[in-house]
Length: 159
Image (cartoon, rainbow, N blue to C red; front, side):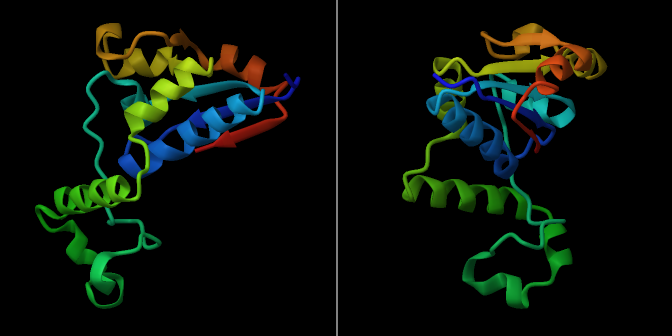
């Protein structure tokens, strides 16, 4: 076991942004890091019992599009009704075909690996979330409490 610490602030609640905090924190835990992930604002979506995560190409010009669509399909077209659902379906299908773990599986691995998953109490209150909406095994603290850990961390990431 190493004395290294990793602190992550997760602020995004979409399918594509769900993977980095869970992959990085579970990997760090496997390497022996003491790891905490602070979920705030839209990042709290990743702690919901029933997630309905989507992915959108809108505002994400780096997202590779199927059939070379990024070369000929106008970016504004990604805002058309149904495009977000189509892109989410396609991404999930590709991830499954590649054998990539689901967000739920990665989240469970984090909990099993003793990664401390933390819900921002202020954001829980702001969005009128109930603790029943969120998974078991997480802590609720304010930014100050998390920052006392992050201030001593070897690596701090904002995702």
